[in-house]
Length: 381
Ligand SMILES: [Zn+2]
Ligand SMILES: [Zn+2]
Image (cartoon, rainbow, N blue to C red; front, side, top):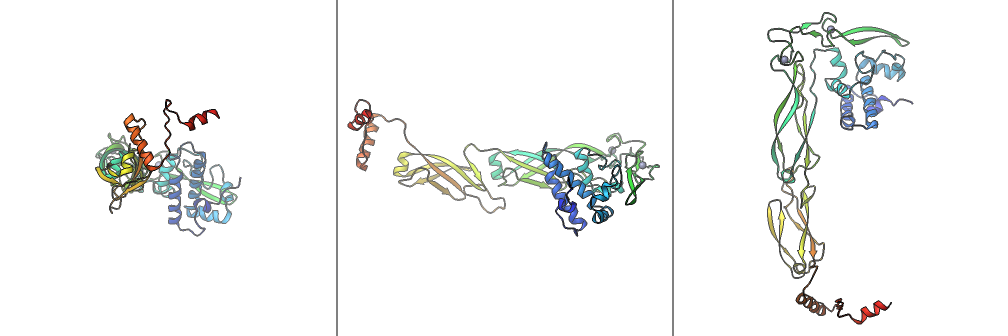
């Protein structure tokens, strides 16, 4: 199968800048990230394709080779050639989270080349379920977020108090060893992660007891979320810098609090408007009269006009949900569901008959004991 053009995969032009490529990749990779689409083979393949395209286009040398030779530039070096970084993912498709870490951890190239450079923390997502009323009126919630943070005891170095990580003597602190590779396009130096220090460039002789030398700890941190009034199901609240901590001065990731709103037993919400089916007695519909309409803030009186037809909708202004931008509320739409009595006693029956006669309606008394001529005629057919 012919491989898709890397520029097309990322949706950028051939002249796109490094920043454009990076932002296009971040956008698409977040969209197709397999964690968001478990068991979706199409997304998985798309994500893999994105990573591959980004790996090449984000690297000046590789991009130049690709521009000149196309996919052939890399296929020829298969088996650990031009674009295989040893322990990286050219040599096999590892865990998605590893790749995600690597890709968003300051960029694939830079984190590999400078193992001691800053690495940004990952973004985190938290699903917060709130009640219908809380979404409509706003609420303050405390949540516990398990997240990776820098170890306070060793300030993230991983070394026991009073000691320092030592420079790795195998790689000289670079974290990488260089391997020469010869292909039909010339010889390429390919970089492999240093085995001795696992690519970190440092060796820790006395590890910090709190983080066991990792420099990182996973902690449950209490975070206050101010959920704004008017938020709707599926919307998320970005909390800048509340994700995983960055390493070595890298930026903290963000936390996205995704809101799930429980349904209401009376109201349906569309945008900022609320919808309610309201029972109205038939006599009120005929004669007009006051009804008590429930709202989010108690009941309000409403005067049903005389002669109200079934399923007529009344609009109660500003009785809906508060708008997110703070400019007032939506409206409440009340549908009049007219209730007819299911049984009548003799007195009621005669009253309704009188009404029918007065309205000029034909009265068919359906009581079996008093059948009219029309019913007998109907039975004979
Ligand atoms: Zn520590
Ligand atoms: Zn090393």
